[in-house]
Length: 45
Image 1 (cartoon, one colour):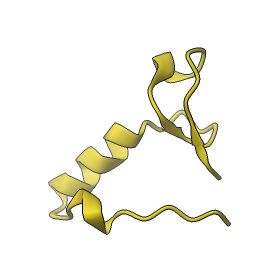
Image 2 (cartoon, helix red, strand yellow):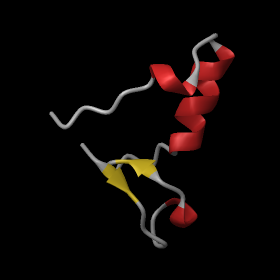
Image 3 (tube, rainbow, N blue to C red):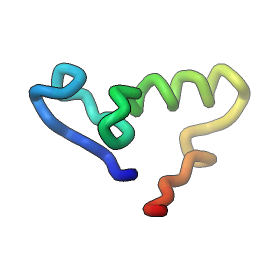
Image 4 (cartoon, rainbow, N blue to C red):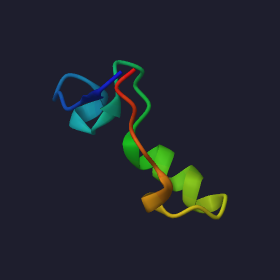
């Protein structure tokens, strides 16, 4: 799964694949749970 930047998808916000999950939402949840954005990694599996 890769990153998607498409004006027709989630109002152009970068999302995880075609899930509609916005990157900023993932970062927000991680920070809320005490992780920094540096802890996030992307996998190309």
